[in-house]
Length: 474
Image (cartoon, rainbow, N blue to C red; front, side):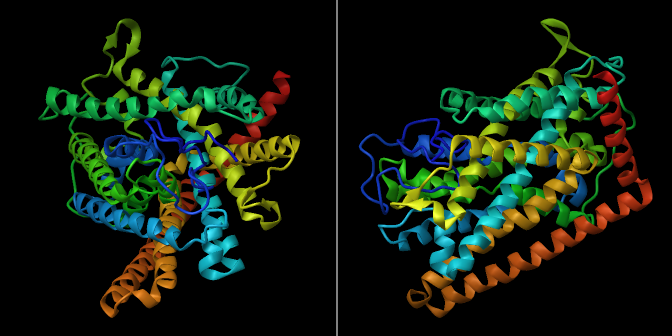
């Protein structure tokens, strides 16, 4: 199994499973808690670190799409996903002690063999979509690090140059089967979160009335907009990652206190997201970009002001931290996807675990995932907001809300009262309705963009042009 992927706790604990392969650290079943496990604070920190990521950068954009009512939507989404987090942990209590504790295995327990493949497909979609988003973020942040008047290299524009350089830099990582020695770099995720939050707070504190924004007049605000469902998709992808919860639970000294960890972690995430979303939307208004780093670079008190090194501005410092964090996280995501693919295939199961294919096969799979993800990310570059919302609206809601609720209803049906059953059914109905509305709105929005702006043709021409220039350069 991948024992050092993105879900490895940073503080305390003995757990080391991948996000999807949820084998307990203490053996079959929940088992006794580890002798040296994570404390309440450490487990909360680990959970916040795992859950919070790229979604933080798009909070002001999500508010722009939905208006101020998005704050209420963010609160509701966080509360609902907090509840579903507790449900998925309860579900694993029904797993037989002699079976591998994976999310696909839980799906098979609840729905039979089709459940294994349903969960595998949804989880694959969520994590593969997340990896494509990560590639776009890497390209964008690298592009933001380049000088403003960067010339052509090998006939490539700055955008194409950033794609080529980042792709060549990322490809070798697909040949490394383990990232245990790089696990400390996960701390960069926390540093990025703190930097983004502090920078937004500082921008509003330095210019509370937006009089010193380089772009005047300041953009306006809306109370509510029809794009609220796109916002909900971004909020969903920002508070999902529930398949890592059983691993986190078993890494604690006192696993029975895990409900407190879930409550504290989701409360902390809500506070941080609300600060960046509310203040970011107040300051940048309806001009907010998909990633807040773009706004900090061109329309904030920090625009053009260097720190320590000429040309190295605050926004570039934030972009650099996000770039390094995304660069080191991406290969871990690929390892998680690979590990999850093995767990979906029943013929690879052996002795309650998962038998690994040959190293060459695994490397080939990672390379194929990287190539496919790069192609999709290139096409999705101009519609990053819609892609994030689609991943959240379809995959995250399915994996982190609908599946845990459905499995809980099936596995605990006889133990639940009428009121409890009704509540879970309502949760399923509301979640399904949200999924349909979010996916529908994003599909319509993408179709309109392609139709009106001809973005599909432009992207195809851009890809052809890039390939031609690379061939000429060789």
